[in-house]
Amino acid sequence: MNTSALFPVQHPKRLAILIALAAMLSLALAMGIGRFAFTPLFPLMLRDGMLRSDAGAWLAASNYLGYLIGALCASQVRLPPAKLLTLSLICIVIVTAAIGLTSSEWIWLILRFLAGLCSAWALIATSAWGLGWMANLARPSLAGLIYAGVGLGIVAAGIFCLWAAATMPARMMWIVLACLAALLALLPLIVSFYFPLPPVANSVAAPVNAAQVSASASTSASGVTGLIVCYGMFGFGYILPATYLPAQARQLLDDPQIFGWAWPVFGMAAAASTLIVAGMLGKCNRLHVWATSHALMAVGVILPCIWLPMTSIVLAALFVGGNFMVITMLGMQEARARAAANPTAVLARMTASFAFGQLLGPVVVALMNTFAADHASALRYALQLATACLVASAIYLWCKAESAQGY
Image (tube, rainbow, N blue to C red; front, side):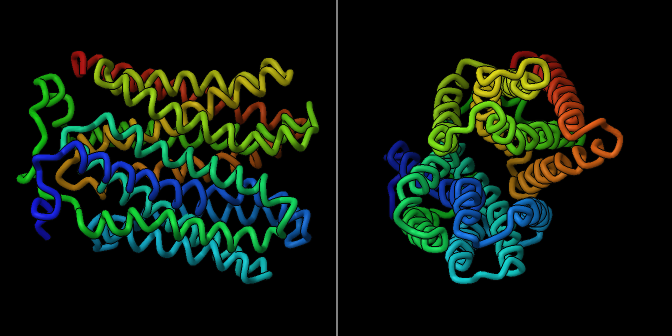
């Protein structure tokens, strides 16, 4: 399709904003609703007797497994990013609605698996499509707008659950969320249809400086492999506080209103952080910022191990929530820059690494339960291990940035 005829290249800024908004809505749907809406809906499903309390862990594990499988097989799906994006968004809308149309926990396990699988596809496809266009149109700072979509989706799902909890059952909330997801899907589906990823030869991007070229041009397996390992450590470090901080907070302050707002506030922090960091990247080294984000997340992970008043829990949530989408954005940008000729494959490997680290988190806690004095001690040991992984990866990324001579 001749995209230049539909939207002349004399207006690259308008086109870049349009595509960034479409990609933002794609991630809001895929991650904020398709993947993370289960977090605020889970207690409401328990309230309504839709499922047993122990089923929540199995549903979460099924979603994590689907995310991992989706990431591993994404590069094997012979579809261009725009079409993979379309397929994944349509499937997420259907799967979200289907949860409200059945009462079988076994079917929910399958549906949450499919939601995780399609969320991984959507993240990979949206990143390849959106970042590819931003590179072609010389608007890399708009990546912050794209990845703010995840936080905005979390905010939308959380506020909807707060508003609807008193007026409708959880089953109906899943169906209404699916309708909201369908509305969010309209713009990305239309824009990705009319503006599939252009070939590099048609790029209208302005030249970049020599330092950027030298740092981004590396496509060696070792260079990309190091980034992939660091991204997996991020997944391991992120999932432990994301899973267990709410439980720790409940032990200190059992106020439902506070917990009701915790999820939207977490999403707001995630959305704001990507916008702020994206605006700084023109002046800062991307790998340096990525390393700093790992170090800050490490602070959030270790805080509850050494200091456990409510203030510590809040600070930990800010350190973790304020960095997880920044790291996602930076990791995807850096990986794509190093493999611009085939971005889907390397982005799939990055996402699979994160998914593996995420899946490993609860497994490590379970293993440590076998020799620790109690569950609290096992969790503390796991958090300490996660902190060490984040610090080690931060040091690696910082050294990598230094070896690139000021990238």
